[in-house]
Length: 130
Length: 135
Image (tube, rainbow over all chains, first blue to last red; front, side, top):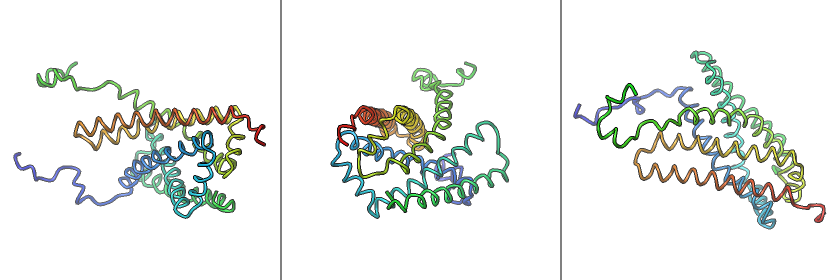
């Protein structure tokens, strides 16, 4: 028991990547990304209420390529966290635990994320992305 | 407690056992998740249809509606409670060095309360703003 260099469970280095673990990790990453997004929401609301000049600056920043790229990323993160969150809520009431169902619901969340992000941006782009 | 005799003397003295907040944490995370399903979709739809305008008067006009202001306030409360609980779990899972862990846990709590306060104040200001004077 003294050999501390022994591998510890869950052997992350040799673990084969599976959809269930990728989606689980993504849920946390998108959650953190959305948390960062609340900072932008806070600045946006604050400037609308208290700093009209900065509000204009903020909007031109968001309309830039980098701004749009960030908003696109947040759109993906939002729909993923929403879809996978609903998947979690079903697990919480004891539904959908069998492996085939879990794999199918996982793919459904990925498809939902891509379709909804495409639909959202398809709707937003004619307005100049703003 | 049945298991208390299995704990060391030091463990008993330090008393760092279960905080007994697990159930309320778990439950509140799910309640806010459920609330956020409609509220977040409503917020995104509002952004797309009315709010994403370079003219801040549009945002003010939109928040002038009491229904919009109330839904936005509910959305903000649910978002920051949900975010605080979620980020707390991530910190507790990955950070075990006490100084780092407790610093980030406190920072998480403070940031969520401060952001929620600022956002709700801004919504109230926009709601009260007499935009008819500016148009």
